[in-house]
Length: 393
Image (cartoon, rainbow, N blue to C red; front, side, top):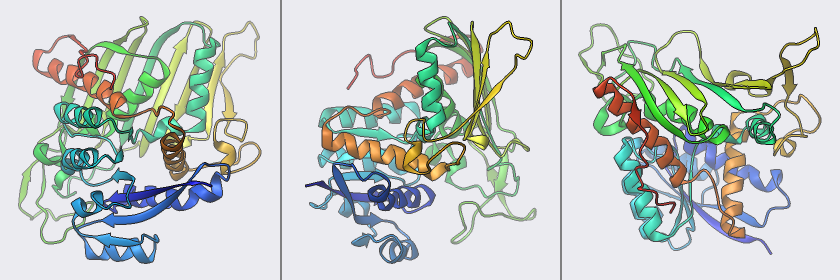
């Protein structure tokens, strides 16, 4: 007898749809599971999305008020996939109701908001998850296994970057993502957080940082009416100021003594979704790029004249890949990573296993972010201080 887990999804935008699809797919992907996910209720302010939630995704019902969804007695777990400014109030309400919570990042647009969300979940004693979905790429998991096995030797340097074009159009509208009180910080909250989470997953804690920021597109056309989040204005439209950063970079030191460099940009032209890392050790190196998520580059230090990087292709010999495609070099995609994390979160709820990354790991990421923000002001190296005060939750 499988455990029924009633699910509420708060916001049916891109990620809300991705998580909803993964719930529908999990039974066919993971037949040995101990649970059955049930799409109980979707909350969204747009009537068209509410209609789609029921007709296209199979939710039992859809509501306008997210509080109603959270407080439904037939809901066991809540997925927070709404805009950033709603994450903390939704998380506080869900944890107070005793519901397990999976939130897309950031769990708060500013570091202190992420700590507030973590504190609420810790007080309630509920299981939490955060959407650092790239950790669930099979080859990223394999890279971690390779590093921990010692095949790379001692890690000496890490290079992380997330360069994206989603904000590169200067006529892109001034929506909430570009406003500090609604979206929080910019590139550091939105995409650098992914780079930092991967680095911490692969190499370990970061102890000190120094960095810089820039807002490369300082103003954007103001949205009007029911403008799309990715809508485009015209040169003659009235404009408003962008309040957070388009670009951020940092140097860092890891607890194990390795050095690191990071770059993130939402306005750079060229890299379309270059979430990538390179790990260098005394015996070898690894490199991975989301744009080619089914390929891992491996360099082995050898005396052979045929030395060079070797491509390791994804396949069912790597963690969780076989749920989607058998054999070798049969590719999987982004939403398969979402299904991996959703399955693992739900499995943790039913088996009482610990789940990572949760809100504790989100605080680890924003602790690095806060040190970087401090360095913007001090223009010098800043220590990474655990914003949760060492509380592991």
